[in-house]
Length: 87
Image 1: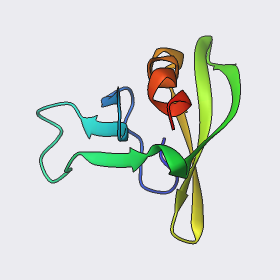
Image 2: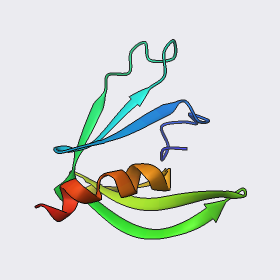
Image 3: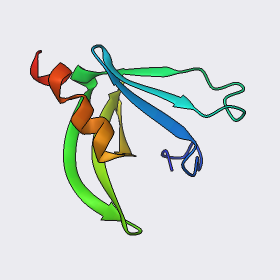
């Protein structure tokens, strides 16, 4: 779930890149949902944990004057380490 936006129920792909985390919705659900880039300097690691029996990494994302909590696969967060640490 992404804030009050709605439930995406595993339909989101998160890719670690040099610029930040890219978030996109699986096709065919992607209609009207453009890929989103979240720059590394807007992301803060909160903690690792388990939700409904699955490992997850809780992140906080700055979005203007708001903060959004995001639960991602730990592999996506770990894959970005080489980019985050280089900054």
